[in-house]
Image (cartoon, rainbow, N blue to C red; front, side, top):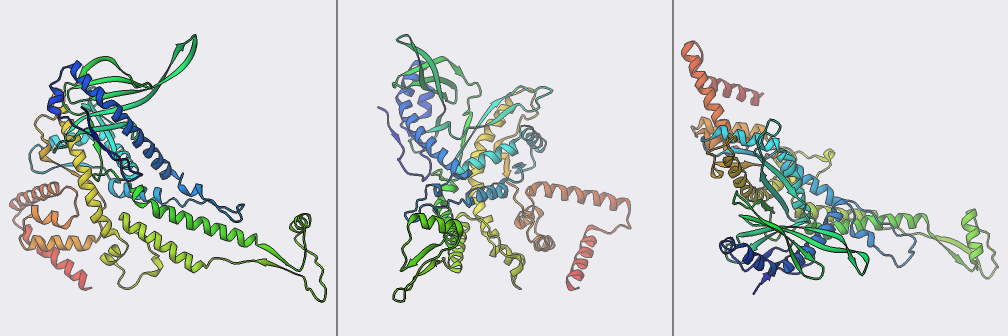
Length: 507
């Protein structure tokens, strides 16, 4: 019997598909048995995928500006109904994407082994435009909660330097299926495409709709058509995957695959509502209602008044006639306070720095205090969580890339292991540069080894490369000193540098 899990939630993350199978048992099955097992789960997989796909499309439309405010209704003065989008969803996703991946992810060595091969791996990654593809997949994650990457081998030629190809799978066409067991291991992935063909029924051509389902296990690929009547038709032969690896990897930054858009949606909607009502208020103020006292005006006369912009009414001694404009506006101060409160909450919840008026800098609002006050310090701490999860997913992709490289005789990567590599997301770390460099100087003066001191200050993306460069510089200085005894020693140079920096600080 087949079973699955996945809850029917309304925009609170994507549904992840789990089935009661283990990868080892699936890989041991023959083609006929495997098709029979997979056929049990295809209706469930496509149903969950359809729900995910619908919500992903909604979130992507929301990100681009098609937001709930366009459904706004008014029950009084319906002709004045402004619907304004202040698209903070796009602005915040754009900032997060630039903040996290504005600089390319760099593979760096954890130890000194295989340094040349890591440089080759980075070269291959640049050739495949991995930097741009990382940004796009991170955008998918921020907007829809997840993204998918497909990797395959590619022959090295004069025109193709890398032994692999990297593609981002469409965010709304893929699912990864996991085991419901304790390990939740990846069983297979599916790429689902809506198709149609023309069939002849009762001598009339009719369109027939179906889903083409490509299934990727670790060791083989199968294709079937899931027809609208519920039948499953297997297409073509089972294709072996010689690499024996999962070619598709799911990327996400939280276990529920909840997106940044979903987390901030209520506040996005609140800001749009407030802005739209503010526009309504201004328009209603300009188009104020006329109130006639002790005067009777029919529709024709009212239209004439609107056309001419003036009115003539009659009064008696007992009943004084008058006309006035009914004008009342929202308190701008109160609405601005409410708007600021919404915007501040939005930035705090999503971990986004909030720009402040540069003209209102106080005496204490400089350096680290300014970074903290505007939220950059908090954003940096929050960003590390996303980095950890993204790097976990990228590590799975990295293992596939290395296996592809080692299987290609023309590749220059033969012994490099994933365990020897660290992925560095190079956010801007130049804030408080003077404090960091002074801290490094103090650590080195205190005889703290370079390999421990340099990572502490968090200034360089590849600490090992900096240590290696410093060691090389020291060796060159010693060689120069041995050739010229009059040259100052490295320790004397450091003392002179320290003294000069102290003099500059005192000045």
